[in-house]
Length: 217
Image (tube, rainbow, N blue to C red; front, top):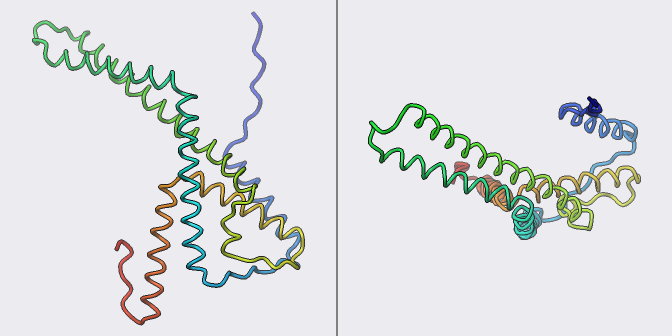
């Protein structure tokens, strides 16, 4: 019997994250003497509000595109899971209506097993959809951000006289951060907008010398 080739070694998440952090740390240390702080843009509150509004619109467009991809990619699995769920629930409903004397313990166990299996399969399909939304959404976000849509660049202004490595690092971080924001979808952007509104309200209240309102209002 032919033996299967060994699986290639996989990289664990902690190792991958640690490698990225180490790479960024090394880049910072190598350019420590030449790194300078960037300046914030004027009227940063308005800039942040405009940024969130713009990214929200782009995130909504991305969500619609990802919904189409999900529908095309997992159409068969999703329909099979829904059909299995309908069948299991129908059998469970008939089980409830049947006289107790006509049902054996095996019949009840089989129906409950079918329901559990249908629920697990439906959850697995939904998990795949979510994973596709996150992964493909992040890839879309990277492409969109690399094409020029940025978030940090709308809030801070790097000094054009900075060393090239610092500017490149800023652009790389901006691309990744923007991609992550877009991958979070419109719900994530709505939460960000709410936090921004709360922060602005609290700042205005402090400047006016009044009591700071609770964060939930």
